[in-house]
Image (cartoon, rainbow, N blue to C red; front, side):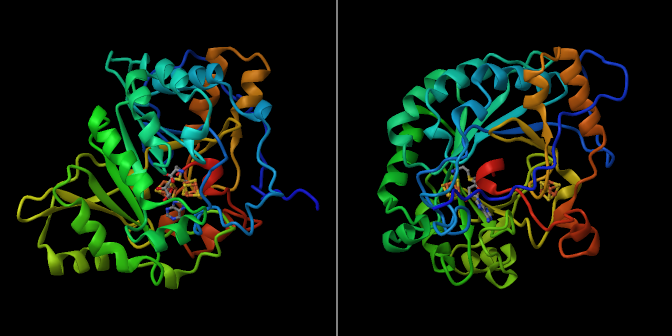
Length: 369
Ligand code: SAM
Ligand code: SF4
Ligand code: SF4
């Protein structure tokens, strides 16, 4: 059987620096005046789940060619790039994947990243998104390494449905135990992400809200997105966040809360009785590109400026060519200053379609959520 590789439309080459090389310093702004503040780093393209909306088993099967270890950025390379991004204004780093807890010795990377400080001397906001399956075992070592908090994905409380969605026979209890362990060691505030697929798990919206109300964890509902090309996305399966809020409010009255910051992706709603809050991330029905301050670094060191990009900028090639910090920092600056991506705002328009000439996009498991 031939090895199968999902095309990621990789048109990327090592960035070419067009201006004078300068030591990286100061906040960068893109063509829409958006600063570079957040960096999401994918540390592996592998996962022990096969979520139907992300890594469907028909595609990510035993013949799927995951990246060889030599292709991955080493921890030294990740730390070096992270340091240059921080010099350019990044204040928050999120580790993701694939399943980040599958990357061997991830704690060593966290220890290195936890040492970084912003130019003003503040520590970074260092976090990680996980499916939770290994969290019970790892919560303590992650905390000790310097991780601040975690976001845990959980799409249902009904065990049969959850096993069907993760398609790898993991039980809800594994994830709930992981969340409890993370709370016990203080990896807080914990966020719990639920991707809502109409007709698949929307029956779980109210039970999930009931379960996490008053628990200290903030449950966030994410609209099912058209990331990648392998999940067969269809608009009819998107349940608008407004409907999520309405369904919960029928049981537990809600009132809108102020955003923590302009770049916050979730709209916050508080339980009127004081039982905490929920968030809704309306990537499809209410695009927030205008405030998008996120860059993404793929497992093999390509810099992506949008979750829906079809190509990245090959920073690994620069790193491995012996480029200096000033050269890499200058390349990052030029790339960010040229950024005009706003896919969600343009979704469905001819501009969005022409931004992807071959219709292919990177997969979420490759670029990280
Ligand atoms: N494996 C980890 C996890 O599941 O938390 C981290 C990587 S995962 C790609 C990051 C986040 O993206 C998860 O919360 C996941 O539910 C979300 N996600 C994946 N595919 C999605 C899609 N098509 N639409 C919306 N969210 C998606
Ligand atoms: Fe794995 Fe996360 Fe994708 Fe699910 S959403 S398949 S857990 S990477
Ligand atoms: Fe940011 Fe792209 Fe998402 Fe818009 S579509 S919010 S630019 S990642």
